[in-house]
Length: 84
Image (cartoon, rainbow, N blue to C red; front, top):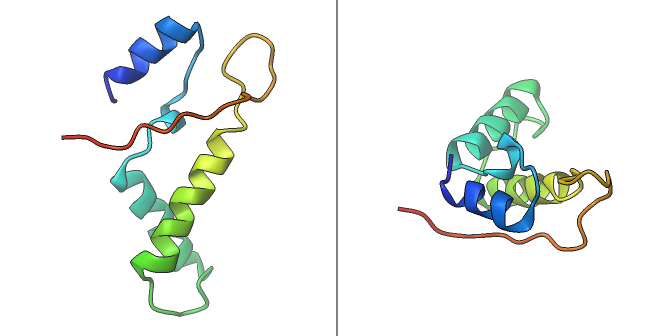
């Protein structure tokens, strides 16, 4: 897990889930599962559009997860891109 997530939780007084941490492995796993299930109708899986669409879908799904006691969706979704 990215260590910055804990800082964001404390600073913003929110509770994040493991889904708020997107990794290459999680994206590839979802794409592979979709391919095995036949979601791509036998087409060759490609970075564009399959992986990029999965990243966008993940962000849109996770942005709707309530992160505080109000139970409402967040007004803003901050994406930190990078890593070591």
